[in-house]
Image (cartoon, rainbow, N blue to C red; front, top):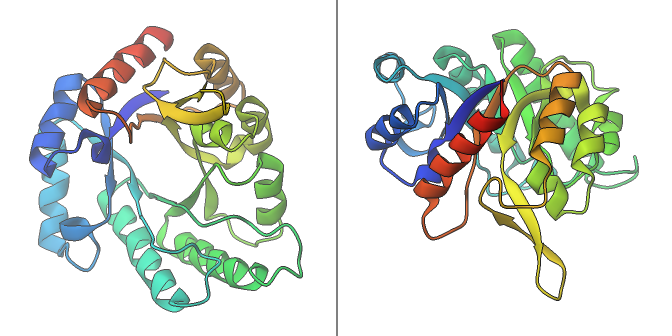
Length: 259
């Protein structure tokens, strides 16, 4: 498994963030396809320059994140949302990682759920587009169990759909992250290294710096190795007063655990 960092977690402008990632000694970075890096803003020249910039810092692109205002189960604005994601999938192929991470929304459990039609149609359209262009859509884990994800994706006739495995998101939502590794197995296209811990009298689970939470990372890494996951472990830190220091500590933590 290879260690990367999510540039959003560093809270720095692009060039400074790439320099910081290189300084940390990681070999990969996850970028968000927003602003100047969105597909409608990044020309062919801009795409070539970004690839050159990554090479100059000895970095690979692990995946493109695609933040959405609404999930794929929302009818309003759905066609524009799908078109945008199609463009991000194509951009992902151009830039190299061929993986796009998206928070699709909670998957419906029953066929008569009114959200089932919109999200099924959206995922099929995006999966088929990914099949054509050579890129895959990774659904962020957290809202649904591994069983629910596999059950929903199984009948969809496309190889372009998988998951971004985020054990902290699963833990925060009361889902067993260790069991989820085995269930999702070959569906895992990309993984986030993030931690969470039960805190306070309310027993609420919240995000904490990597290595300071309730997740057993030796066990998780062994489980990932067992299902033959050999991809990226991308350190993500979305909360805290000194996120850059937390990311650096998280990278060092993973290095101690990985062979």
